[in-house]
Image (tube, rainbow, N blue to C red; front, side, top):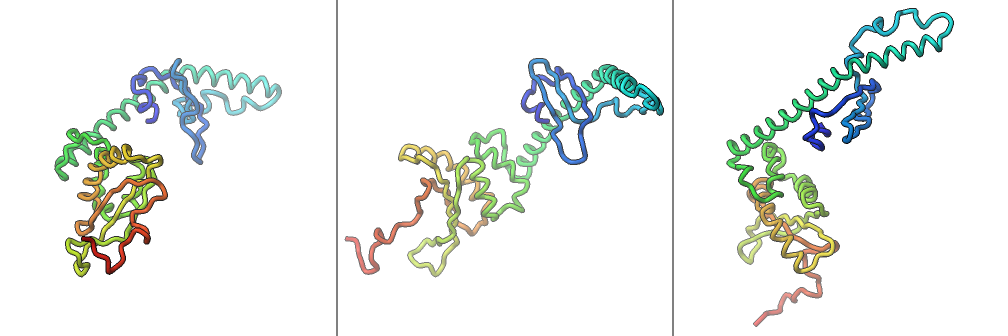
Length: 249
């Protein structure tokens, strides 16, 4: 799968050598590969492993004298058989690459159909790259809506920056907090933030903020997505607060 994604134009050029060293615990499937020659060494078993042992060596061949010579003869026959079956292994490997490519295309078409049919979102027409990536999560939105740690991690993964969550605020359309709504502030911590970069990043994240508000947050929660430098706060310090009885004229 990785080779198909990394080198999509080489599916018919790979020459496979199955080493048969894949053990029960996990180990890397691709032991080595060379894009210049197209050679791939795989830890998995090849077609030769499917053959009965008697085709390589008789049951009692290694018994008796001259064990070293007999063992070398067995290994030589095994190497010749591996060379003989290499085209079959390469053909099977290329077929799996083709299946992987076709499956990926089908899945991409499937997710596009699901988003357009059930969520009224045409992914092909979405121009914002962050929203296009986040939209892939819509089929799971019933389990993800309101999961603040997940939303925070998603924003961090999409932007590449640290993200913090502030739940200490309330939202009200009046000056009274007798009727209020919970407010969640996600803050993207961007190092080296200057005024120009602040404006640029704020505009870049605006479509993502709208997507999160619409799809990943409860309807009765006010959501904000802010940009700040690391270490800065979203609230004013005590020295900047007006006293209770102060009035502005």
